[in-house]
Amino acid sequence: MLRFLKNYKRQLISRVQSEYPNWDVSIALRYLPIVKDIQSNFSPSIKILEVGCGEFGILPYLGPKYKNFTGADVDFGASSQSHRMRMVRYHGYTLPLPDNSFDICICVDTLEHIPANHRAHFVSELLRVTRKKLYLAFPSGTFAKTADSILSVYYQANYGREFPYLHEHRLYTLPGSAQI
Image 1 (cartoon, one colour):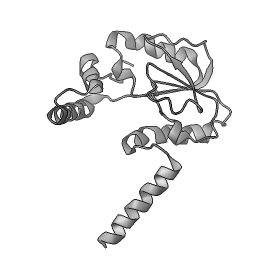
Image 2 (cartoon, rainbow, N blue to C red):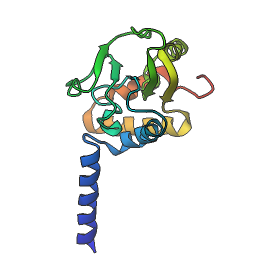
Image 3 (tube, rainbow, N blue to C red):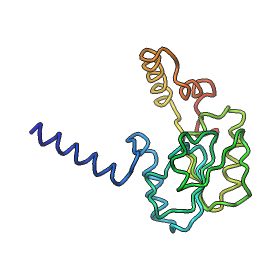
């Protein structure tokens, strides 16, 4: 039975990785509902912007037929996706993009890295560049705050320093749905 389960796990991971290269289960859980909605409601010819996408963002989950993709971020890592996305580097809270220039704007796990006093302006910028639909996802609430605290303690115990992203979560506080 154990051999069967290990083999099944290996096959499952192989199948998921073949469909979603560079996948991560915790990231996939954030993106796959957005992917499902996009694929159900929009043609592959739409113009997509993802703000705060880093090197990959939604691309591993969205698939190659969606070709009109722009990413906006302060850092794109190794930029391995430069063949799939137009990369716009920017700093600050104002997007260097024209009004209504994208059908869809996606912003996942970015808002918590922006100081609370700049969030309203940042969200208005996301809306300004979006024609049809904005997908905005961020950690919020008591559970997210508790999880951040546990992860922070774990990271500090294992690496002797605070994880930068978790530091920003605490420094800027997690956004609340009512604020947004």
